[in-house]
Amino acid sequence: MTEKRKRQSTGLERPAKKSAIELQELGPILASTPCISLPREAQFQTYLKEGKLSRSKELLLYSSNHDELDYIMREEEDGHTKHYIGVYDPTTDKLLRVIEVPRRFSVRCSLRRETQESQREGDLQRQRAAQASNMNARNALGLEFGGAKAKKQIKSLTENAITSTEIDGVAPTADAATAALISSIVHSTADMPSQETVQAEIAASRPRPIANLATKNLQEVYTIESLIPASSLISLEINDWIEDPDNIEGSASRFVANRVMKIARSGDTTKVKALRYILHLLQFHNSLPRKRLPYKLPKREELKKLMKAPDSIISDIVRKFSTGNQMPRWNVDYLITHICALALIVDQFDVDIFALHKDLSREPKEICDYFREIGCKIANPTETERQQMRITKAEASDHRIAKLRIPLEFPTIKARGQAKKR
Image 1 (cartoon, rainbow, N blue to C red):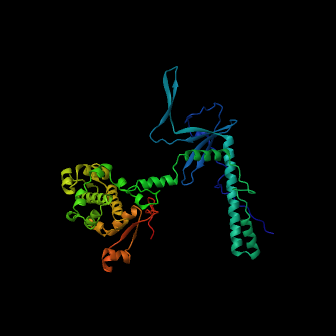
Image 2 (cartoon, rainbow, N blue to C red):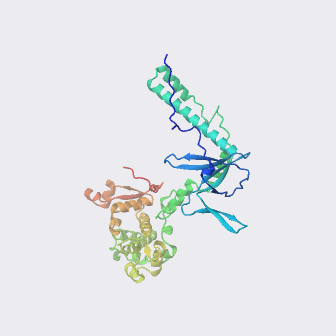
Image 3 (cartoon, rainbow, N blue to C red):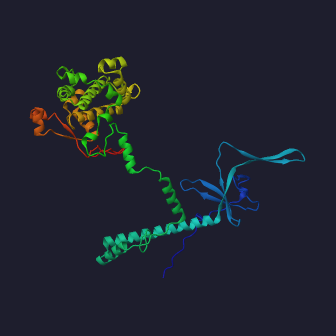
């Protein structure tokens, strides 16, 4: 019977414990004790700690002779400062020796009980993780290569596992830390606005007139009083249109020219005022030098010459739709959505966008988006509408009808940074 031979020692094996070194080999050291009072009876043992990523060694001094506290000294690296110790003889008043201090340390202390508890807790967690890993590995092998009975048993164990969130239908009691955290979260979120409030604030910040969403009458969704300032309603001149509808100069706008004679003859002052104000808004829009946003407003004399409106109406339009002396993107959109809302009042809430896209010099898709912004639906003209507009089927392809219906459907506001769907 052969016997196993023991491996001969070469003297290069790593010892089980960290090797201690004599302090005399290091010479004197300098230690600082920030925020602690180091007792005189503290005795330190020296250890060398090897680095994991390099071959460097860290010198540690450890003391455990205190009843409850552990002290540890770690070396501080300071390549710009050197420290010296001098031996002075007061009898001869001479400096006998100067010794350079090669190492400087900083002392820290810790509660031994907490350190031991954290070590035990860490060991327990590592043990549980190892057990769970081994169990998962065995279950994976059983499900992959085991028989039908073994697979059924493994699935049964998984389905009947008791979770930590609920035991016998009773939720576990939260500890003090968890209860304090939940209480702080509830307290900090108590003043947060609700989702409905946030959506209302977002809707109010959109560049569109305020709609009456509580009404079921289309005539009350957008009213002329909510779209035109009160001072402008008083200053609007419509008598010349009503008294002499055959001699109206409205050819500058296709939308106005196609409707002014019929509406003026009807005597409906509300629609006449809305149409006259649309004309002023179109003149104001077309007077802007559309080079680069934000548009810069023309001088007051030029505006008065281009718009041919009273000073009070020009002032109201500038005050309502501009920011200082400029027209940023939001203000331009706000102006055009007001034109669209007034057009709904004039055309009984079914507007052919063709004339407006010509008057505003914008693409039909842009005008459709402005009508959608105020809650309209966009549709192709029906056969009846095509015959009423007296256009051919080929011409009907360039026309879209914006229809306001209750309930209003506003475009969905996408979250900032949301990726586009392909």
